[in-house]
Length: 162
Image 1 (cartoon, helix red, strand yellow):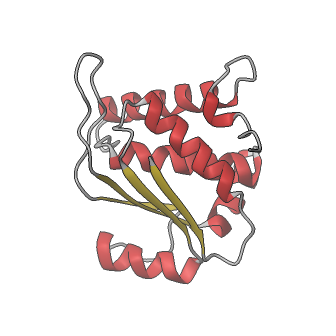
Image 2 (cartoon, one colour):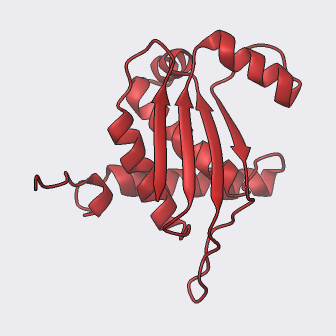
């Protein structure tokens, strides 16, 4: 998988950790191993401009998802489709406020927004109550699995030095 994490936000974020989390989520969702994803952390002004331009909404938001090849989660007995998953725009400044309000901090909020954004890129939505329940349930399960120290997932293990 090609996962690029760019930080243009002015806030410090763990770009390696976000790449590992993204790889974990994409593996769990059976996304093709050669799929591409770009995550860009931006400031509030930038995300507000993007939110107005693309979503026709005023003001900054926490995460925006821009799907490219409309990839969907892979099925167990089928080869997943190769392509570009898309781009995520995250705003760490908003994540910091939301994380404080939720009582779980900035890092946990950025992880939540990353998983949420990837699910949007995979076609999940939460406009209707059934969609909301499905998407947020899946998001919670993915985050719980990622954070569970008893779950050995290769994406979270450090890469050995050559």
